Image 1 (cartoon, rainbow, N blue to C red):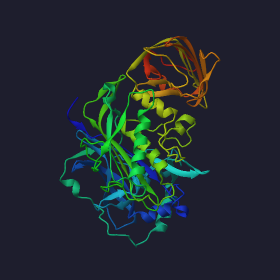
Image 2 (cartoon, rainbow, N blue to C red):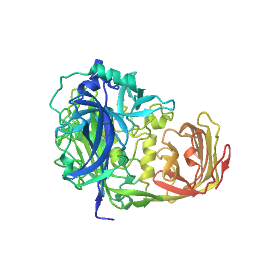
Image 3 (cartoon, helix red, strand yellow):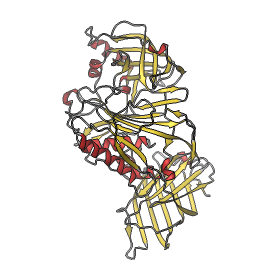
Length: 550
């Protein structure tokens, strides 16, 4: 493994957005008036240059924007907006929830001055709108928050608000002009000059983290996290460490994977933007790396990773080896109604999931797959009292990324993908029959989780996780049946115990969207308990209603 570190800091930002009428308990998208009021400068312009810089081992990106119109702030023909993350040489840092840019893009920006007197977009992506043209030539201001977890109460529980908002540009700009005022909160520094000295790299886009995972679990080694001893200022050290331990334990005790995360003791927190070899959980944003909240709105937490510079192959796909993970919980939320130990544990479980290489289960507000919507790795926090708990899709994800050392073999008697190109709603089908032989031991339907994962080019097209309690056994216990949701549709899965460690399986699933599986190669992984087997199926490109066999 290369000794050089690639600072691929894949940071997950959790954004809280509130309405003015119930700031401490209602978390919905801030209206334009409020966003305007808490910003120091609001401008319409076009991106001219994107530069990523390294300063004091911290990777940031400077976005130079030529200004067309100023709605708030001093007159300026050009401003530089500084965003966390970017790419410089072998270093890469990414913040989920930070806005992305490309040269030539027309943008409407709401910005604030940070502690370094630099302009940054107000609450990351919340302050950036792209100006886009529709097919009829009309212009719209479009904002996307799909890289952030968005909270909103509905029917007494937390649900997602739409991650994308769009409104007619002319009307939006007229509204901003009506809000214009000459009373500013503090002096503004509209141009950022500190990038002239440090090493920098020209970019034409500012996007994307690489795939990454820890490789130590493959060798039976644990991943050690250090937890800051001070704990959250409101909840206290004991409750904070309890939440951290629960978050680490829930990813370690899956019963179907090799990953073990341990609390290696307390550590004085270190800046999270640096690859210093320390994997940590810090509280109270000790180095002011996260924008301060305003009336229970803003950024809750940041979680990220550093990776080695040379990718390794896992299950036929390149992954950058993670060398460090960092989680920072923000300050200033202690008086908010949602701030309690259970929700902190859920928050940490989600962030730990990102530091082990998992992305969001879905970023669709109207996600039709119940298992993706219920997942702790869903882009919207649930805050439903679950605490640190994994759902079926979380289990399927971590066990596919960190399979146990135990192996199994699988023989397919039938494997068919049936596509419906005329579908108005997902209507593809999957048929799989075969025999699974465990290397040792036998399947126990009362304790073991079974996972089926269909992938193309490392991307999952279909994933089913059946956990204990979902099976219906016959009287003898020689057969168990699962009938329920699967992806966007339904599935029936029958397991028959042929012999010790030998299972006959038969699955029929329908109402699926398998469009991503219409190219070679198709890989099916089956995991039972701590044993897993993977087989690649050579597929032909499918036409409407056609079937693919091995």
